[in-house]
Image (cartoon, rainbow, N blue to C red; front, side, top):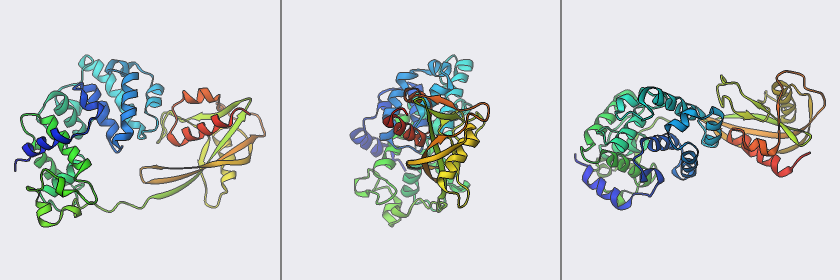
Length: 352
């Protein structure tokens, strides 16, 4: 089945104007592909533009401090991807003279670059005839070929990669791959696919059989786990206490947070905020007033973070203690999105 001709005609006519499509720079394409994983396009655009202004090439990224890299990434989540970008940039400078390899097989040897990202970089930047299979492509292919089963399981996963590879044309392989992803993102959408607008509707077996809307047959997602937490804001002479997670922390390693803990069963949030200060910053304090609630998600966890302003009642009790940062200094620290919101509250409230 030759899908490339109608697919590329449709893509040339309707594709979205996106900043990473205005270049064939392998570095820029690499950055965009990493940022776009599990993140909406409209969210990525300003991050991508700021990132390239700050780290315009592989060498600049390789020389950057990790704290600066995390600061530029904050808000996108999945911070291990930012660390992998930096580690990979260091290896590209060390082993490849500062230029990303042109073969997908070499790209997968770099940290954070799997088969999908390698295929995207190699086909778009270098014209290598290799496939890409992401969530959008899976949706298109399972519908076009009416493929039943769970695409996360090995048999169908292998079949999808095989089909995707057969479809890549010798001419314009990068545009073909982008067109497949674009089709899945804009027309062959998860719910209520717009089959009447699809350039592949005549070839689509899922459409012909009435199965399109039911494919792919994904396994049910596990129910989200609710996680109650409390965070503490304590001020001293116009500065606020924040703590840095260790480099080995399972989440947000090396980033700065307001002292926070997961609440024990039945533990009042204000007591949790007091405990957070003592356990994370060595400060004894009394919760004074609630500042607000921050809700956010990390993978399957739904976190409700109750934030309390606290009054410290003792001197620092452990070493190292917290960093006492001004509102301006908080802006320069890499913080997860939830704690960045708290920092904005602090900045609006002013010194105390």
